[in-house]
Image (cartoon, rainbow over all chains, first blue to last red; front, side):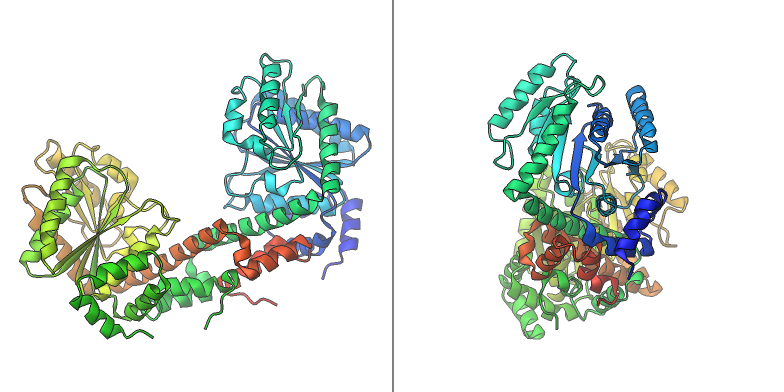
Length: 319
Length: 319
């Protein structure tokens, strides 16, 4: 068994240790996964904030601006960005990259991006595991940037303690967002690019729609305007995130979310595991090979074979 | 344990017994599934023919015409039609229904349609189980009508001993079919509506494409023209199906297909089973509930929980 506290010390002392371990975990290296096993009991301390929104809403700029403010207060922060593998629009994002790069010299900030392309269904899994690593490494605040909600059942909404939904005027009128249901997952809603036409109207519309009881909890969801490039309103966004963090602790909602997150992670892992199994040759599993042989010999129906193979999931007894 | 031979006798003597049992199996009635368990060792005798093609190719008319000819030779035949739940075009299909209805008086023909709508992923499963029932009930020939290839991994190509791909001129130029890859699954290719313009050209194109080694086995795939409404060419289609049946037995390919079918049915069943499990409340599985609780308490990573729950599939030991 790997010693967890020694490992954490190593992650803090050696700047290259964390990125290296994260890469190994992303690649599902067996030894790195054992390290994660050792570190897992140390997790659950960080406040995990999902920041989600369509491309073009200025999400990355908002994150860069939030990181600046978080560092002013002295708190360490980690950013995990899930690269949508699509050609991102030039200027602003490049500017953010440079700002982020300037932060690399700051040991209180750790920025990591993850490729989403070429994965065999394991994106949700990998995202969660990297968040666990950052959590164990001692970052009290972890920002996870994603594009929209996940397609595979587990999205940032179930992984995060707080979800910030970023909107901007000009990308639809807010009604689209309401229809798409992405606002329902938001604990904080931000209308970014507040200098653009239609921003005020969008804020009003969204405030009204939350007034109609769109929030999943009984908490009032703040709808805030920000301009990530000028920095206007970003302090309020950070304050709203911190307020939601406090609210979770005061209302016992954090435990509920953690349980929901564990559930989502196990269920999504089951799906990933099965999809991989189905993509492989059955020969890689002796039990599966044996079941198929019995079905081929007509000794057992396919349904009974499936019941046998999934017995631990169904909790039924197998003769 | 249900007595299989008594059950088969019952299915043959009481005309209502087979439809009733099929409905119960479709609804996954536990007692009916036990009957299927008892009957399963008697399956594997029928020749199962998948007849697939886009709507509008005259697939149903071709099947009606094939059934006429099969009955002339005195052989019993069952037809399982998977209703795509879409409003089917009027005349021809209605005509076929009437022809089929006329056959209801004939105890050597059994026609059944299955709804594909409203199923929770279990279509492939249900199709296969109804085919097993028809097989056990003693039909030596079973025609399964489907629209195109399946979306969920198991399609008629892996369930059937022979696959007839039906094309018709005017629904694209055959190049589409080649691109879509549906010809690759065909053991017999039929260009129906041979009286329509472009039919001869389509037959030539398809024959050439098979000449380029498109066939999955080393067998020459016959490309035939038919006119299901006039009956022209339908005898040749039936002869080609019978020839493929003989070829399978002579070349040992039937055993290969049966093993492939068993594999596909088990893998598709695993997928269906998991999807249903994920759609349910985890509380329905004590093992799953327990795993989630352990993850929530940070005693075990989600990955290890998944490994534990899927242990029989991976064949690994669990401590």
